[in-house]
Length: 308
Ligand code: HEC
Ligand code: HEC
Image (cartoon, rainbow, N blue to C red; front, top):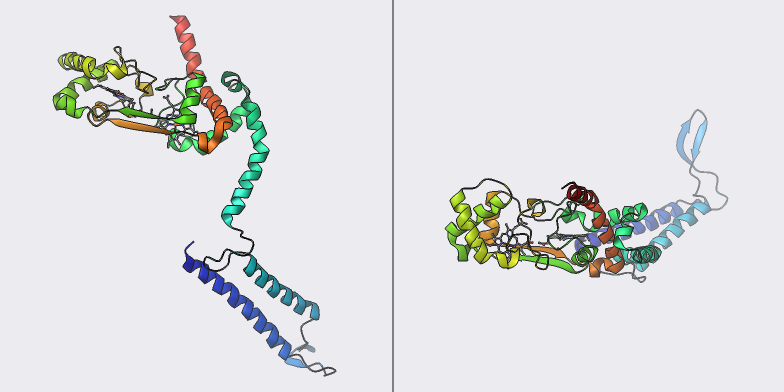
């Protein structure tokens, strides 16, 4: 809040208290002397006269107490400009205390889950419900509520991984973060080179591209790309270089234009490490949750493999 607002609210609070004091003094002045006859207000209906009696004492006392309470509150709590109040209370400190109390309550649960191996924990419904909440709060902004990803952010449900899908690799991705660097190769390749190698990458996904472009593109690929993406273009999890044969795991789109842009200008995807935000135990639970997200895709692959 700006300090102008603070002053505005503070001044209104004090003005209210002063108005209360004035109101009491005003009613007290009207108090008739001892033993005086009941004064009337001059209003009368059907024989009922409205008397102008003094305020009952209990009511006055309530008024005084309210004023004193207001004054004490103003001194103890932040009320003016940057004045912090004698108690040092703030919304932030109140929030922090709440967080600490919650942490004390839930930490043992996370510590317990941390003892269970990832694949086993992924089968525990209760743990996965907690995992879904953690994912919703910490990961969904980028990866989507269902983990399905969106342009620039990988799909976590298809069991296709740039950095590997073993529990250890997933854990490392989440705990320490990842930084994928695809260098800008437009300068080295030239526009014609970009066109050729893009046609080759396009053809890797099973789509048609002009044969001569694909042939020359493959040659360029062998010179410029295999160091990271591998001779068969199947990627390298140590570098986070994607498998270029499986467009499901691509982050930046599968259109020819997206491929050209990637190769010409490069890409740099950053997954923020969660160690300092969430700590080891929560990351362990999230690893199991992410592992569980691709359960269906994994089962399909196992079935598909046994069908062959
Ligand atoms: C120094 C290693 C390196 C080299 C050389 C390299 N790449 Fe990459 N490439 C990567 C990495 C790492 C990524 C992932 C970038 C990210 O995650 O942001 C990537 C991403 C891509 C993507 C994007 C896939 C997606 O997710 O949408 C394409 C396409 C691609 N590379 C093609 C190529 C081609 C073609 C060449 C050669 C002309 C090449 N790369 C050379 C490391 C490399
Ligand atoms: C600020 C956005 C952002 C947030 C928040 C985020 N991620 Fe990511 N994440 C990314 C990006 C971008 C990548 C791809 C990095 C790269 O280019 O290789 C990624 C990659 C990953 C990977 C590796 C995928 C692979 O193909 O190997 C995993 C696993 C992952 N994230 C899990 C999580 C989990 C779990 C959370 C919540 C704790 C989370 N992410 C939060 C942006 C984010």
